[in-house]
Length: 385
Image (cartoon, rainbow, N blue to C red; front, side, top):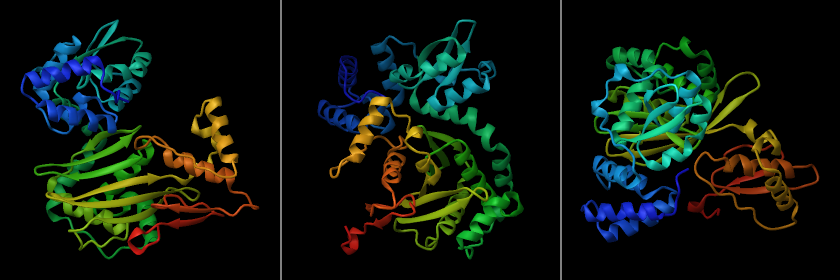
């Protein structure tokens, strides 16, 4: 996680931005506050929000932090080093690109200096010293997409590209049991969009993703997974499938496929096998380029593993158990997306859920069903809040 509060180095970088006319002092002060709220460095916030030019910001940051700067347009893709699968997985999760390696060092492209502080796992995995080279954020995003998306969905995307002009979507299918059966069959369904969506859902489950983002843009369509709190691009299907992909997801979530002007919320359940099912919360958002759809993966099993599965240090565990044992009070759980807030709270409910207790919850929304607990989904619009 990037440092949220501005350091002296960041203040120096902010001064460079102001002196170069990339941002005003007032806008920079506001950006500091917004970056802190989102637990980002000033540089990462400004670049990700598109408030300053990524290349200019990278050059100034390289000077400020004493790091080399590279324009990725200059690299020779055929000369990039081959990385072992385990290390490659770590690099992908960390959003860095390998540039060169020798017997002692691995040089990687990074978009933000703070990334270097999070590469201990990569150093441990490779046994090499890690050196960072700053590159423009937008160039690194494109380079990572180019490097990795073919590994995951090249065959499926090729099939989609060939079939996209003649695809049709059966919008009459709305029964969740039928959806689960169709998911289990996988390739038995002749509809390429259905197969592609099923593949994306399977990949997300297998990779332990907490969210899936289906995002339409003016000239492209992007699918990203959130893994360990970080969004990772995994596919760019043809843009002309955006309506069909959104429609398929809305059918599965029992949403109104004809309503494209207003946001919608829904849910679906996918049965993985005879004993295990995965719940999904589905949210749609109309944008200027089509409907964005975000799926939240909710695995009921993770909340039933018990407190040992939460990874608490002994002192943290004692505090949590002591708080649960109090006759009254509040337990406040905070953290970024995918950090385990939901699982922690449901684990606490499961620990309290005994026959002699009456437990009622007020949730917005109810994410996991807990047998023996009266769960209430609050609805402020009708006064149930």
